[in-house]
Image 1 (cartoon, one colour):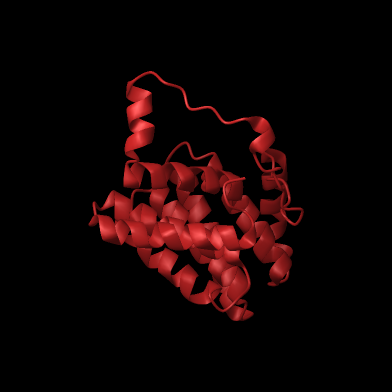
Image 2: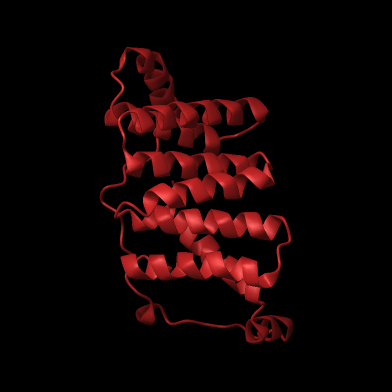
Length: 198
């Protein structure tokens, strides 16, 4: 999953949702809003997050998947392969492959009773539904992610799940109040983790 990208997206989405009059007025007037770099927080990197797979790594992983035992390591590999297909979607077939890998990872996560990985899988499925324009399923799977992730200490993925609920609300033109609640919950969670817009 893409935590830094989702944080930047979250910031932009809050601005778009609220429609900050000062920001839009300054843009219309041609004024530029500047921020001194020295005042910006130092970007923190999640040392637990591994880099995404390359195409060669995906092909190798796909060959090995059937021989791997159904455990957390296999779930991690399935999610990374899923990420690759999701990030490089060129057609419905690649998104279908991403969906199948996420569902397989979810099945294993539930079999081993892992709330963290079940939540990660539901979040991944929600993101795939967004790419497939299955608007009603975005919120359904994001809320499933929220339900299991609230039982864990994985606040970043919980916040990202709230972003997906917000995305669903935006896509379905829900009332403003319904749009704001999930984005504010996500922002509060990101702030709690120290990952607020860095």
